Image 1: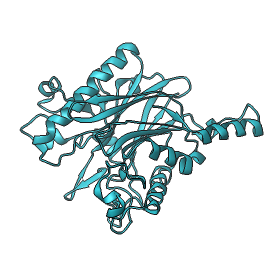
Image 2: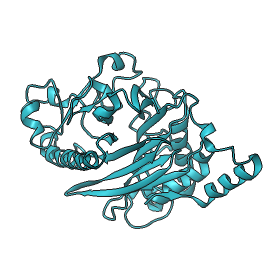
Image 3: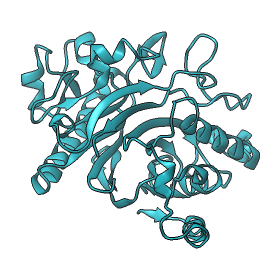
Length: 347
C-alpha cells in the first residue's frame, strides 16, 4: 500500500503557507530534470519489536535493541543519501522487516531530502519484505505473489509528465546449491516477464524497470554452463532456447522487444564503474543487484537511460574496497551489498 506520512503532509502544508503556492518540493530534485533510481539490499533491517517472525539475532535474546535499530536506520539513510554525487529520487529496498521500518526511515532521516512516499510488500510468512521510497508520488503499488518464492513489489511513480513502472524483486538465494535453486529464480523471472507483458499491453509506451537483488549475475549463464538460468545474455549460445523456458534475455546494448538492458553487460559503463560488482562471494565479485531497463529507455522519447553506477565508496566499503557488511556482534558495518543506480534523463 502506498503511504504518505502525516509528518510529510504537515511539512507540505507548512511550506505552502510559509512560502506561497509557488513553492514545492521539486526544488529539492535535480535541476536538469534527470532521475536517479537506486536498488539496495540493506542486509536485514529489523526494528526493535518482537513479532515472532524475526531471525534469532534480531531479538533481545540475540542482542538486538532499540539503539542498534536506531543506528542501522541512520546508516541505511547514509548509504542512500551520501557519496553518490546526488540524492536518488526512487530507492528500491530488499530485506526490510515491514512497512513501518520504511515509515521510520522516511520520517526520521529521508524527509529532509524530499522523500515522502513509500510502499512495501506484506508477505506474512516471510521475515523480510521488499520496499520502495520515493521523492516522486507513488501513484499505485501492488504485490504479486510468486509460487515458492518471494513476491514482486510493483510500483508506478509519477515523474510529472510520464509514469515509470518498477518491479522490485529479491530472487531466491543460491544457498542450497546453484543449480538446485535455479528453478525458483526462473519462476521469478517468468513472473516478471508475464507482468511486464501485461503492463506494456495496457500502456505500450510505458518505461518499465526491473530492479533488485536477483541473486544471479548478468553473465552467470556464460560462466556457469550446463543448466538453464534466470538471466541469459542475448549473445549466449543458449539464449534462444532458454528465453522460452522462463529466462529473461539481457544485453549491454539497446535491447530488442522482449529483452532487457543491464549496464553490467555494457562495456562502456563497466569501464567507468568504481567496482566490478555489488556483492562479493568467496572472493568473486557478483553483479546480483541490477536495474533492468525495457526498450522504452532507448527510443529517443521521454525518459532515457544516461548511465549506471555502483556505490563503492567508504564507509560502504572496507579498506580493500569490499562491501562493509553489517556485523551484529560488533555493531559495525552497513550491508553485504553495495547500492546500484541508474541515471535517467529526458523528462
